[in-house]
Length: 117
Image 1 (cartoon, rainbow, N blue to C red):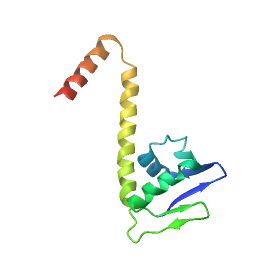
Image 2 (cartoon, helix red, strand yellow):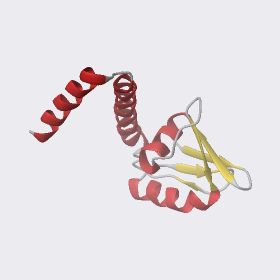
Image 3 (cartoon, one colour):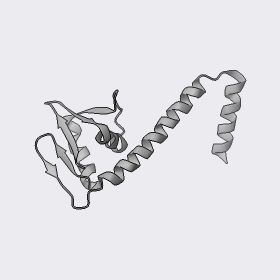
Image 4 (cartoon, rainbow, N blue to C red):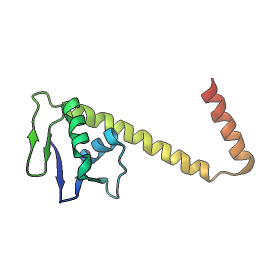
C-alpha cells in the first residue's frame, strides 16, 4: 500500500489506515470517522519518519517514494495494536470517572499497589 497525503494550500488530510499510521507516529488526534488534518509545515517531519521507516508514500499529486521492501503493513499492524490499547485505556478512564468515595479510593489503592510492585 501507498500512504497518500492529500492537501489544499494550508493543510493535509489523511484518512483510514493512513490516519491511524500518522496518529501512531505523530500522536495527532483523530477527528470523527478516523481522519487527521495537519498543517503543511509538518509534512517534512512526517516524510522523514516515513523514509526512516521504509514506508511508501505519495504527497498529493506530486512526490512519490516507493521502497522495494515497503514496511507499511508491518507498521499498520503496530499502529492498530497501539490504537486498541489507547481505546481500552479511554474506556477504563471513563469508568473510573463514574466512581466516587470509598469505591474510588479502593480502586486507586489497588492500582497503586500493582504499579508499585
